[in-house]
Image (cartoon, rainbow, N blue to C red; front, side, top):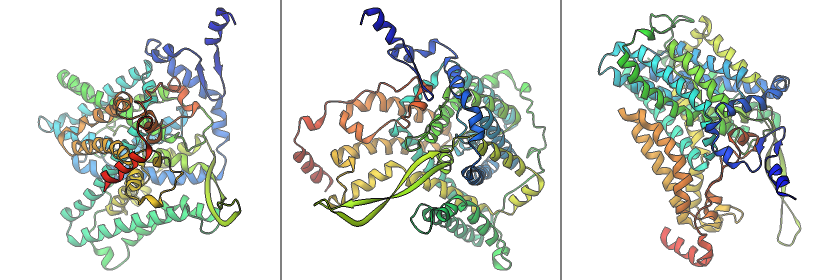
Length: 582
């Protein structure tokens, strides 16, 4: 083949239904910053042909079950965080603001997003951000807070649009399990802390009896949902019945424990705290929905600029990781993604939410993969275990396989409509019957779900397990235990520092620490670990071609240092492990 033919081949565009890449154009991928708007253009171009199928594919039972489940999974944590924000911002943010923000994001992303599976709403991290800024502003002039937050949202929107326009979302392709697991663990711990704080508030606002009853409701609420979801993923009964239990676990449990607090007699007379509601479709405070942001002094407008930048940093990682986990390796997705376009949309919702005085909506890390999971079709098959002589054993192991995902827009859209309906007077009255203890239980459910499924915890359990009971097929058995401990120690250190900062007035700086996990993994850890160790311990959070195409394709990750096993005998390594861990 001649040089002309070779050059032509290197520039040949490879187009499929799921990806759009250029062979041999690594420089183009790396420097897409010099081709502004290209990422958003290709995101829309790839996804637009699937728009009609995003509607027609939705007419299945899974869409209905997912809508009900995600309504509760989105609503309950949003209300729970709003209870916290209401107390800490002198009731500037209330239930109506949280519902309006979640509904706005749901409607925009279900209709216009390139990846409508990503659940967007009010997160605990923006709650933390909002009341931390309130603590700072009230040291100067608390009346500036509404306009200041409006300008924070405006600046955040501008930075979102700049990041999207210059294709900076490309760098999210470097996100691996190292950083996404650390972030997931951080979010889970924050949820658990908030649950405890909610219960502590019951003891301080009311009396000890209210506190103890709230603890009982919260713990039993958590145990009920946890038990039902475990039954749903077990092999008990028929598949349709255990699936029904898992789909409506939140519905059954919430109805029961809310009703429990209203049982006549001692239970109903216990002075627990209930959700505080306000006039339907009106702000919590006596104001118009539109904030008079134009009345803020110029100096404060520019003071809000770095806060808007920090919000963008938080959302850059939080929203994109939410989208990545909604499209993670375990889900057999077929349709393309669109990170640049979706981040541009997030900037639009940040702008609107800011000038309306709403908490800025964002991708929900625990809830986004739950949405995809609720739309995934699973099949349980029996795997026959063979004996060493080749004969089939009578013992069969159930194996659950994800065979397909109902990729559509309708579940997210219907959930948004349901949130708008919740802002009506009758449903707000229903919300008022819910004790705050239920929302503490919600914190525990979502937080523990993020922790229990986290690979950091799984690796810790592996290190504590007796060696003779470990399965030889487990990839972790291929590398020294002390190397595994070193790896998770780096993750735990990052989580601990971020959690610690989040409990101080410096909490607005935590997005910087979260973002720093990406270059740490990309540039430093390959100097500390061998290529074999990193291949076992870590992987791209999303490696689907349809997902990575939006970010310029698979990244060129450093492979790591010289393999330790090529320089030392395996047996010597294991002896050192046992001696070191003993």
